[in-house]
Length: 430
Image (cartoon, rainbow, N blue to C red; front, side):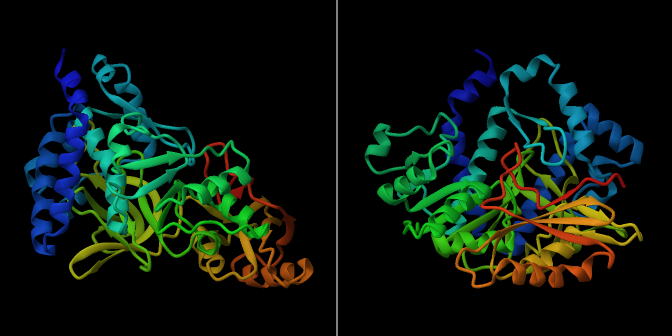
């Protein structure tokens, strides 16, 4: 039995230790937390220099790992793109040691899926960060009753002895069920907490609202998998209430920020991750730009200045890092014949104010044609002609004046094969 076999047997104990540590750290004041973050950044930099992939990057940039002492010092190192990370992981998959580790996979929403490799202790931290998001949002997973869209990790289980005692209670549903049966399951189980991908929960919400079926409103629910846009959030809240816990992160490093019910910003777990933003002027600890994340617990395969790919605003609130204006993928953009560009943020700022719309998706068929796929709120009093005129006027300011806008009216916008719903699709080679 090697060290990793032993660590897997102790996995649940590591989980408990990490969740208790995060709970303790959350009580620290901003100055204490920043000092803790800096210590972990220093440890990460020294460890990264022992990894051939990172040693090369340090040496090529002329960076001494001992000079990395704060989040601001991370700007001395280059960013790590998804393509670079994917190529590195593919190389590591050929090494013998990985047989002891856990694999997870990205959704492939920006291209080819990537395999992530976690040793036992790091996977325990990764695993607990989701639970910490729920706890920060107000839900108590130890004594609450959860309904989730998939069984998740086999170590949790259902109907175990401890769950029969009322601890970590959970049941599951499948999106392969008929929507009527899913709503019936929610109403019969009456969970305190409901968990599913945002596209999945939106389908359930739409079905219940369109058919005037009352659905149990859990005290809390999480719509994971992608950032929830304005129109989808309205639908979810109509069906399930105001207890939405929205979290942010990626499978490459876990969820590391949470938006609690009633708040309009994401609170960053600074003991677990160092977040920066990249603009045309460089890397900064505040401002609007491409989010860069450095997980402070990934020591086997470090990620430093990892480009998640989203545009966000990073700011300080009472000395703590928060994320606001989560505007979507930096590469989501339409370029028109005149050279004018429409970004995801341009679309997002309008979409979050829409009325009479459940879902909307934008497809650039050509330089001169934009297709809007729309799901209308069944309670809307506008006819389709009036709603088309309304939507044209809303979006015309951010596209070329000669672009033809046409509409496809759907009952539901289906998710992509990866389970997510891309809001912008361009068929034009720019």
